[in-house]
Image 1: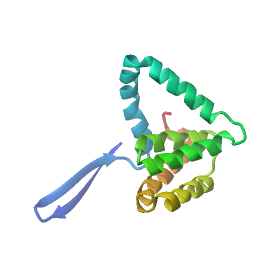
Image 2: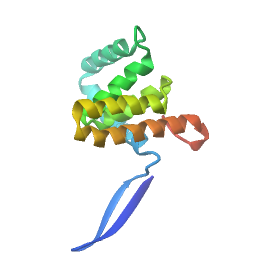
Image 3: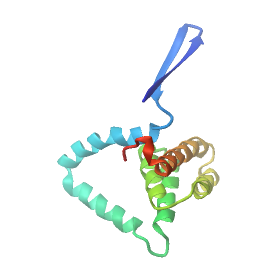
Image 4: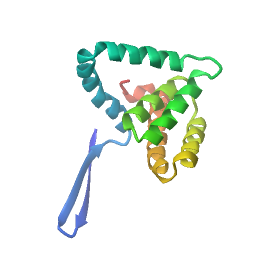
Length: 144
């Protein structure tokens, strides 16, 4: 869902059209899906290899899958990658991570990456909460 924000500027009225705060991170993934499909058709072996690496990296071992997804989420924060943040926030929720665990993992990014991590960290926590809240209330009509 799109929303518009209006405000007065020295040159007139400013307008920003944005995604609903309740589906913003779902929308990031939805927007990327056709782009990934198009690129996957061009380089299927690369995508297949990436998928295999992703599955291997996220398979539970000494660390459970939720912890691994939180590590990937934190790396997405440091990289400033909204698609990574949305994907791994969703993955962490699906793996059973809690909001408290997500917040603590994001907090470590502040230590390691400073000010920029506070911006993408806030985005990551919002993404995690969006997916966690959607999973807690499946009647909200979310599409994963």
